[in-house]
Image 1: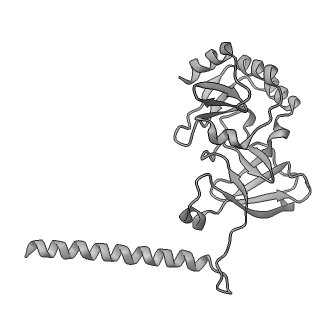
Image 2: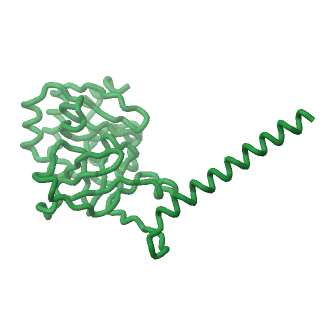
Amino acid sequence: MKKNKINKKKRGIIYISIIAIIICISVIIRFNYNKEGRFNSKKIVAKMLTSNIEYGPLKFQDSIYFPSKFKFSDELNSNPVGTVEPKNMNFIIYLFMNHEIVTDKTDSSNTHIKTLGDDSRFYSKAEFLENANLVNEAFEKYSRFALCGINAEEMEDIQIDKDILIKLEERYGEIKYNKEDFAKANKIYYIYANYLNTQDAEFIGCIMDYQGNLYYGNLSNKIDKSLADLINKLIY
């Protein structure tokens, strides 16, 4: 008799849980329908290239952008253009995603963009950030640099000597980033100056770990053994 009561109680909890889930899904779907009864199709205009929201790049209008300190000259002139697709998309994420892309109306080239939502931040085009003058200014201004946001689970920053970064910049210069490389790399180390404040951190570049070798910026720039040995001592 007691066992039957326990089973009934368990069944009751299961039924209530199922009903609660159905109600939640119904509410979500209801709010994703417009007045005409059609499903609101989110206009996806950008895509995250990695699962790392804090430091990872996104692709927008055929350009790659990295989180940066650069902001709009006048945020009142901003213009929402669509949403950002996460790295691993599914239906539930699609329903809940609210990362909106905002552009600067006064900048037709969209050098800088902003995301709105749970993780609001500014991004800048890679080719803008790769300007040699910007990188040299960062080397002159700051003494501390770090490898940041190794992956989505490990957010620990690893300090790296400025001399190593100067040698990497001298060897490889301005980098052309390829979106395919971010999918292939086993690990990605994003290099930032002023890294203790992510909103004001200055992007320097990134190091990719792929099949046991290290690359600077893309998988064509294999880091030579002497520099790779110095970096490996930091990351392993």
